[in-house]
Amino acid sequence: MAKYGYGQARSYLLLHEGNSYDSKAILGVAHGYLEGREPLQAQEFSGGEQTVARRLKALGFQVTSSRPPAWVRDEVILACDLVFENNWYRLWADDPRIHELSELLQLLPLHPPEVRGPKFRNPNGVSRKTADIATWHPDYTGKPTKGGAIDREVLRDFLERPDEMRAAAAAIREGAKRGLFEEIAYPPAEEESDEPAAAEGRLLERRHLARERNPKLRRRKIEEFLKTHDRLACEVCGFDFGKVYGDRGEGYIECHHAVPLHASGETTTRLKDLVLLCSNCHRMIHRTSPWLTPDELRELVSR
Image 1 (cartoon, helix red, strand yellow):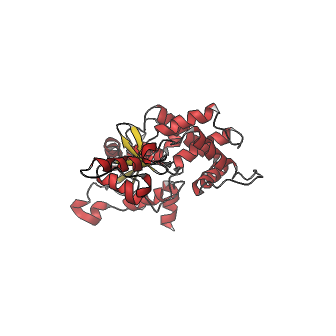
Image 2 (image 1 turned 60 degrees about the vertical axis):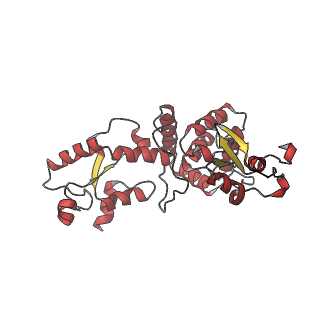
Image 3 (image 1 turned 180 degrees about the horizontal axis):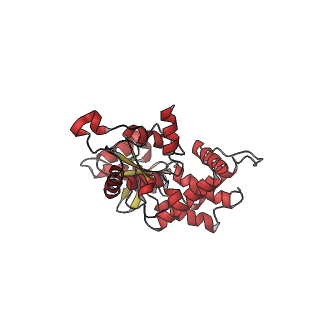
C-alpha cells in the first residue's frame, strides 16, 4: 500500500475468502493488470460508495463498510440489561461482562457479515453503548453522550417495565445459547416498517411468529374450536372468511399465540394459549408495543 501511496481504508473493505482488504488500494493496483495500463496512485482517484465500492460490487465482489452498523433493539436490550445490573453505571472495555456481551452480539443473526466491518461490536464499542444508556438515565447528573433514539426508548422501557424487559434480555441470551436463532435469516438491509418494533426485540418476535405459523398447532386449534362452534370465525370480531369469500375463504384463519415468548419461554405450546384471528385483528394486536391482548382488542372492537 505504501508503494502506491495508499493509507488505511476509512470506509469500505473488500471481503474475500474470510479476509478483508483495502478496497481502494485493491482497485487501484488491479488497474495495472489491464493491458497497457499502470497501477493508479491513491491521489489519482477518489474512493467511496459511488466509485470504488460500486465498481467492485458490479464486478461481483463483496464490499463492506468499515463502520459498524447501527445498533438494533435486541442489542440495546442486552446492553441495557447489563447497565441495569451495574446499578445504571457504564461498564468499561476491560470488564469481563463487556467481553462476554461482545461475543454474544457477534453471534446473533441481526447483521449479515458483509456489513459488519472489522470492529463490529468489539469491547470498546459495547462499552461505549453502555455509556450511551447510562448517561441518559434520569439520575445521571453529567452531560449525556449522543447515543441514539433507540437507546432512550429501551432505557425508558426498562424504567417503566423492568421485569418484562429483563425477561426479554434473558430470553435472547438463552435463545442464543441454545442456538434457537440460527435458522432465522439475516433481515434485508432495506427492511423497514411503519410499525414499532416488538418490545422484546426482533429475534424473539420472529421466533414468536414462527411458532404461530406452526401448521400442526394451527390445525389442532381449529379442530378444538369447531367442537364448540358451527363455523370457523375470528375470536375477536367474528369475521368468517368462508361466508365473505365463499369456497376461497373456507377454512382460512390465522393463529395467534397470546403469550409473548419472553414470558412463556421455549415451552410446549398449549392450545389454550392460541387464539384464532382474522388478518385485521391479528395485525392490530401486533401493531403496538407491547402487544394488545385479545381481550383488549375485543374491547376496542366492541366500542
